[in-house]
Image (cartoon, helix red, strand yellow):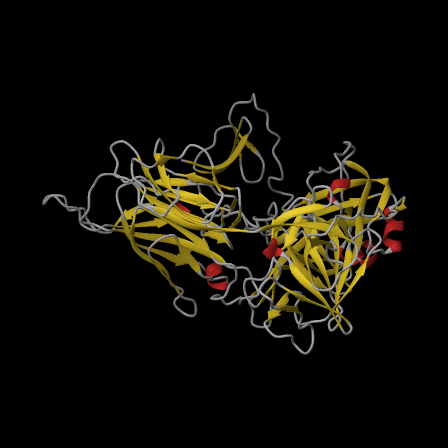
Length: 637
């Protein structure tokens, strides 16, 4: 919805400044109470809003049911105005936004971003197109800099510059990548949101005109330059000029090695991701995608780390010469221009599978690539994959193939408790998959598979010969999967949950699929009476139990909605946290209401009341309307 706050004054041949308000929950693509992941561009009047995930971002932009648009670290958000230039843009920060407030950069103009009590995010300038880029860490939010940054807002207020032409303006071009250090030959793509616009560009820093080179294909950057572009279209004013500086850096070849030579430059590589140096003084090592081609990786030499022998092990320094160390408080890294007294010495031990166990002497934690968070951290337990080392300028060595241990059943795999990868050769049945969580079972036991999997599975699917490493996370046993070994499944018989009572739930039933009926579900509250996030208490006539809703974030999971009340049924999986059993729900419902409706695409519209009873002549109330493959809640007068 947009509201004109000031009138347009056209009688004297000019246009006064105008302000418009855009409430996010009232925008056409969204609906209050509904979460949408991976939102795309939308248009409202003269304005086009374009959210983009960004090449280095882990999470796509989303609209949350709380009524706010959520932009995550490294997401971009472009606002184009077809009617003329904008002079001011203000974002109304949501409750979630105040927790994760971060820096925001604009492609042009001036940004004012503050945290604390006022939470201001305001742009001032003179442009028909502005692109905002969300910062990396929540440095201005209440959650603090250890959390990823977000820009979450419920409303946007835009003021036009006024006094200008009423002729529509072409949207400003955008670049990908948008400047910075690149390897020679990197291709830059230029896009424009105005349909039919022609893009003109220069590489020598001069302003582009209608006589400049016409963009028709990605541009290869062969030497350092300033790329400028503008766009033009019939019966519209030309766009503003977009500019970006590219610096061509020396690419280097790194070869796989199984031993360290003091003073050499090394890549940390795992799962097609190389670690990159920290941009600040602390954090997790972010990654760039890379490919091992016959033992070699070609990349920016600045991604390397210098490893030097010292008493008791090695030091690791980034391309800026800063020492990489750990304090032990967190699982992240710190860097310092001088070598700290503790936490900067590492041991490096080759493993049978060709990886390296790189352990901090002071903390005992070792470096791993965590696929769940797409970053490198330093952990005390098996959290991810150990890295391989690639040395700059070295001849690639043959990576050893360590013999793979095998067991037949899940129970044998659990008993082995190996933090190295072990294959389960027998057949297991998938019970439930949601995001990184997949529950499986065979005749001997049930198990949680935790990690990103390419293939998706349904209840009853049969899998075998899959590989994973053992992890004990706060007493919950998990299999950390090797994705490539989880192949397409064979369809089987779906597994129904086992009916139990609260008093039956125990830690030795870990990851079993259960159903508890006739329970009361109520939000768990702290001593101050505030609801504990995603935590509930379920009670039947035999006792009470904690229910923790793991699947609450639409950016990562199919959200499981929790309803509170009595006489409810809970289906889910027994989890364990610090020695205490609890339930992770897959479904909470009122068995007296609508649980599911079978759809017939050839059927006419059919109506049901909220108790699931078919109604032939609905009137004056809310009903479930089923027509074709679509079911929706409607109000009938």
